[in-house]
Length: 86
Image (cartoon, rainbow, N blue to C red; front, side):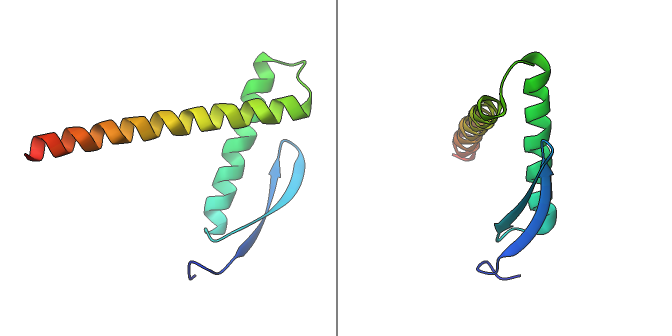
């Protein structure tokens, strides 16, 4: 698949059906959907009174937080590698 070809992948997230369109493989898009579904269920288990909208926002906040932490870790490791090479 070329980087400009779009794949449409049906997924279910928190009981709702969606069609995700993207340039990644269907397997990748299903993995992303599974991650979101798991995060939503994890957050709901400790906050059962959240409505779906707030649950979705908290899930997004948690996912972005994890991404930022991973980016910071990657930058740190790249700097460490660069330092060790010198």
